[in-house]
Image (cartoon, rainbow, N blue to C red; front, side, top):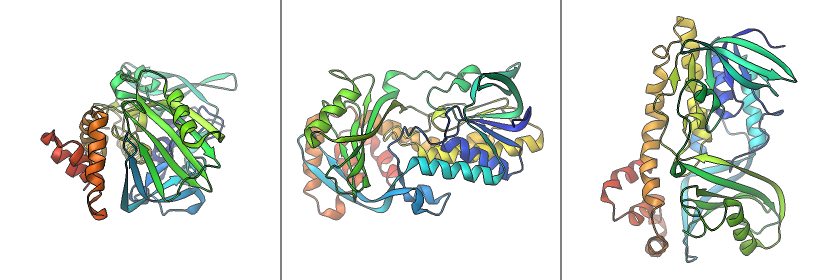
Length: 390
């Protein structure tokens, strides 16, 4: 039973949206989440990997939504050289359907209302300010007024576009991604695998994220600017065929992944943009779960404070910008510079780097040393590399 007014309306039921709703509702704001799919968490459009420290910032880890624990990673150079990197901060491969449902339940327990199968078709505007949303559900159209709308509607956000924010991404800042969940494959569940190569995955990489019991997410992200000689789907199929032969496919997903600089001004009067919609995915890795949760929590807290102060102008919401700059923007700008440099490396440089790292003692085979060696010809990036891996 949707009401005609909520203090805060969140568009999108992913991690950014549900974390925003939980934070806003916990602060006393009357909060609604609108999700256009029929079930939160489905379909899964994600590699499902996250670092343990990033998750523990918000929750104690519950094995109910953990598919597998990762002990390290293996980087594969174009010539087949493999470099194993152990990690002191182990990661997780999630069951995103269960994880997203947990976040939705978390928001509901905090007092937020959630509604699925609800398409936001427009905004209620007062001049340049946002005062609510127009929706469609089960053939019925209606309007919901609010003080703040939080846009958690993903890459190339329609909500942001409707208020005049440029959401179109240049080809260099958008990766085409495709992923299969495969079953019955031979993969060591302790390690994530990353495969690099200008022909294999131009401007990106192929990943294998084990989920245990011979199941893994196997995916590819390639630059839409420089990829030629086949689509991401075709290149991934070729890789799987060569490595595993005929295998069982449990599910598959495709989509665009923003690998761009963060949005410069993610607030307007009555509006905050979060998660992928604000381009908070890591430009180097394409990972976005933790930054979505961070930005969502900040947005919910700031929006609730703004409603309580009766100042939902862009100026009243600007604390969000300072928080995001501290927690996400600076590191993402650093990652963007590294992305530009890494994805310009040719196969010979990637092979030489792998050979060099493999000659080091195991304790020195770190991601930081891999990047320092691979980008040795660009000394201006040394500080970025050190800060990125401290």
